[in-house]
Length: 441
Ligand code: GLY
Ligand code: MN
Ligand code: MN
Image 1 (spheres, rainbow, N blue to C red):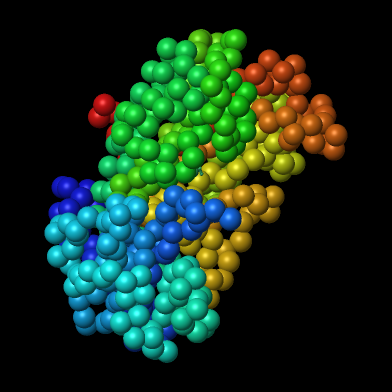
Image 2 (image 1 turned 180 degrees about the vertical axis):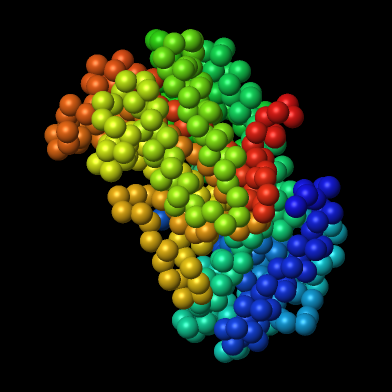
């Protein structure tokens, strides 16, 4: 599977493929049509300011309408999809620009000024409606709104990315690698978390609301807070380490990248290096047919091995995985599907009924349990952290002697290590978009 030469080159085929997958799903579930609503802007309680708009990913699958709230798409088998393109006469906010031909040529575009113009399609019991806008719920029957089996079917379809989608994610990875490089430079210069975050955004000219998720910019022990959200403006007296988990978006598609750096040489730098080798080994083993749960469990054994090599734990690798000791240091899943959503859909279901594919016992946070298929895009993101509340719990309830507490005390001020790459699954060698993007800089 090659990358599309450019994103726009692959777009026409993408739309044809999405049309075909929707037609199959509609037929299987007994619907004549589907109307996909972008969503409306959401104001905060008792105020007239709105949360940043996030478009319905089902609409983004069709077209790059990341900021076009209240647009809607009517899809009928055998017809060109019809886009009610909401373009209000507004002077409070800038209305959406006229549609760009590279994507608009694939649709029958109907520019509309009225927020409810999508109702021109006719409310029909044979139509399914996909979206979260209150206007939808008021107008259509509950059984037609986001029908579970239909949505599951489409979610499963969305796990196999087209060339256009892979090109978008690759471009998001390229931007992410540029911004990560700028952020590392900021860390080396001794900037605060806040300033590093600004460097990151500035280097790729994105504002916070355009990032796929809140940047995790963590100096020192903040790296042990898995979704650390503060951006401290003061620089710590001693800067030891830096963990950054941050991505970018292109036409709604996300990259999700983590790197960890040490300020100097020493044991923590060696730990990063060991984790990096281990992460690369897992990335290289990704291929169609593999059960992601096996990758996750192997990663636990590998991390237990690293914990032992660094004299952080005293027990055997097998017993560290068995007893839950490895999960004290590595308490999250190996990764997840990636696409229009950072944690993309259908990672845990087997079929249109939504039959769950169970997580392994003792691994409640794993987000992907499926057997991998060519065209899946996913993350590999093993981590090893010194997390005070989890260590305390082990000290109170676990085998205290299994942990070398002196070593933990030595390394805890560095926070932890996570390294995260974005991988395309193929029938042969996996395609590591993130490593490719960093190498190209
Ligand atoms: N940045 C969120 C995650 O890695 O899953
Ligand atoms: Mn991440
Ligand atoms: Mn991730």
